[in-house]
Length: 592
Image (tube, rainbow, N blue to C red; front, side, top):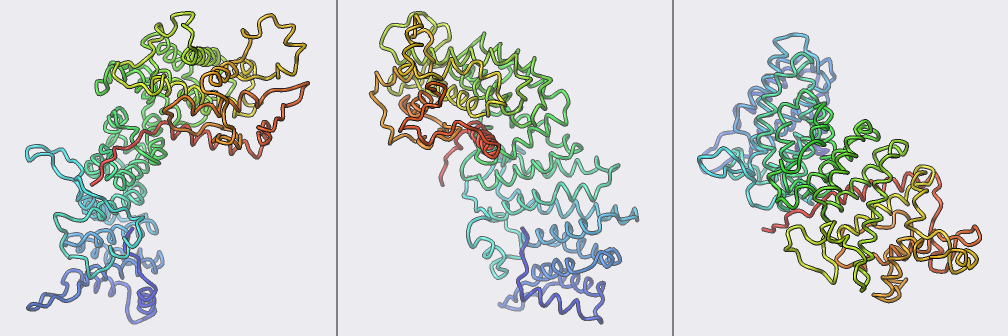
């Protein structure tokens, strides 16, 4: 993240290193003097700035020195750091100091002299605070009486954009004074540099019995980081990414938790928490660290009452809490929380029994998918009846929505069908909240079917209730024996018949899942139930057998019903990606 030396500059460094008459300490003393007393302004003409190029030379020079030379010239190098950090350098200068310091500490971490170690800690603190101030350059106070900081509503430049780094490191365009309106690219770069070096640097500078000394410094730095994490607007995305990476790396060290635990929990419970993009992977790490470092945190989260979430509207509280509980399990390793399964089962049962809504049901199926990925099959025995029953109830509700006949029972009313707040609009003839529920239920079925049968043996006992496994039209003998084929018809077949009756025969050529590889569903949302027709159509024929053979119709020749070992990893990877994506909400799209 610091300015990189080009080939010509590196050749110059090598030439100077080759001069035996110039000792290392003399070169470091010269660097300190040049930085301390840069060229002065003469009349109207201003000479080229030399402080940053000299620090860039120092950075490349230090990288060329052997460890023994670094240790021998510790005091001279420390003098360069002390003198430079006091100056009003431009932002790239502070980045160079931090990069040089990190390189030195990484290669020569142990200082036997206690005074040297103390001096190193002091200069590390000053350099980090200087970079922290640059990181805060895109923040502003909400009012002159308040200390709360917010992100300036301005476009932010990502370092990944072309030509940004070249322009940034063009010394002819860099002022020697840090402006009060420093461009956002510097704040993003400062956050990114801190994300790369802060955690490991502090771990080396502060020895095992001194870690607590670093916590106040970490708290001061994070004071400038959390405002970026609270802002979920699209224009803040570069800073949000960098800040998430910084917190992810820092949270891996248990001694740091005092500096971020409370704020991370507040962010986790914030209504906008899931408004992010691929940063979700870093938040999985952060939440895992939070729950790992605090032994009772997971149990407290599972026991949390939805009424305590005052930030959410009442009709969303249960669903939003359930989503966070599912994400907590998803953030852990396989079987990390299997000992808490009785507690998890109790919470799921409570949500089904009291205050059930379509939103709660959708999050319930997401939680079920997480459990399939994070809990070994042998531990899920007691949960399968709950998961299967809920899937059956939801498919029955979908069947009632698709039929024109009056419902034979009042199940819709008992499960509080329709919007919880009564204000959402209808799309077609099925409510949007219910469309979300049906999609979530289908994704759970898709996930269960995607697992190799030997890894999901218990589900094989229930599969017949959902997907047809016998071609009834071809097996007339079986059909004649059955007294009431309608009663034993799998739900997928029932739903497909109702969809055909209501919307006509599906157009196979238009199916987005025509390759028929598991998992089938990669839709994030739907606006009409017809978007699920390809899914039901495939499942309606994919598992059918005729005289013990897999049915091989012209429509489904490419379907893969076998799970070789080589594809098992690919399937699990896709299931992970789909679940992670379903946690994510759209970011606030604010353009400037």
